[in-house]
Image (cartoon, rainbow, N blue to C red; front, top):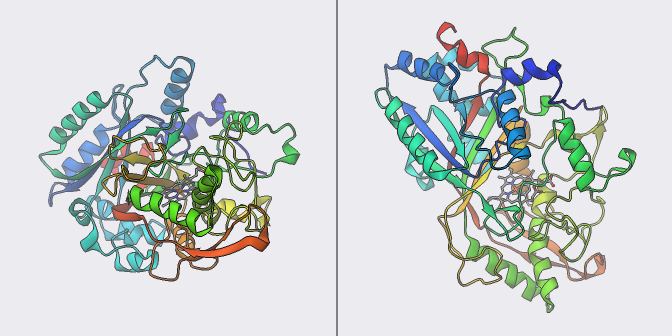
Length: 468
Ligand code: HEM
């Protein structure tokens, strides 16, 4: 039985004070600057002093998970309140090596973190493009990634300039990935292919669970079909530098800049609709929904052959019948990345132990309407998703999910699957009719431009860094 955190309870205060924000709950701001930093040799003391300064004093740039919850709540009650800047810092294995030494990096249990995303074994395991295809800033050795987020884009830009000045004596900014949220006409957050994103997330807090039940019309908890409740252990681990401090927790963090060829994807959706001889507009939309697992408005295709379900952008209380693929195909992105059904251990569905707290944000600007139904005006690049996730194990969560998505068994994930293998999957011409299944292939329209594995250290680590 999962115990959810009550944000109002004082007994959770030390836990929330001890962690950085954005791990258990998204910072929720629409603009981000993800600043990648490389420290020059022989400036270790300055680098440590700067990290310490991020959490020092009343006006510290980085506030705790507790402070973030508080500012989110203030904003919820009065959207006119400026929730201000949000910041959190992430350190790579190379960063820990720079600050301490190789031996200290061994304290981290996650083997993938210790290798880093650029390691040849990781690239091979994930079928990632080789380094020569990555953007130059990501090919460099990045020690830190400072994430800044704000509702005000101009102020964010000004703060990025201040950071540049603060670090210039000891470090270089190798690249900045700017994120900007995209919304559909109903105000729901979408990704560049036009689909509502961020619906299915592990929930750590009691208030989130109450809202979830309302949104999904759950009257009786015993009747829920998909349980999103998660223990903090899904994303939090002991900060290895402070093994005896129970409130010193951190989280492994994945960053991937994924470019989306929107025109290619939309064309492939139309080609699939043609192949399945879909004539009606709703059927055409179903072609795309069979790639993602949800319609653009978020309606799960497992529940209905058409979009437009009430509260579609929040619906998540459904599961799959493991023998049936004529509603949601086995390869549909959300089914491939979270099959929902499967064995249960200690009261928790095993598949639920693989999911991550996803904190991605789109990047790139466009002038067309993402949901306007046109193909000719869609971008072929320079837009995409800054995929970010927190987890307790990069190997057992992010990498497990990505390699599963790459697997051609029952069809590769048409959104994020990578690799040269056969990418054929089965699609039902008529929803829920297994006799109408027809196989079709699809290409890859999402391409990795670079990224890194990091650790989001505890607040105590940052406060005590000069003594460690
Ligand atoms: C450009 C790349 C990507 C796009 C366009 C994309 C799009 C989406 C969309 C539209 C959803 C449905 C909304 C929701 O249920 O929250 C979704 C869900 C999800 N995505 Fe992605 N995604 C991308 C990358 C990734 C990556 C790299 C991973 C992990 C390796 C991933 C894992 C997931 C998971 C776990 C879910 C929730 C599944 C569920 O619980 O039902 N996605 N994604």
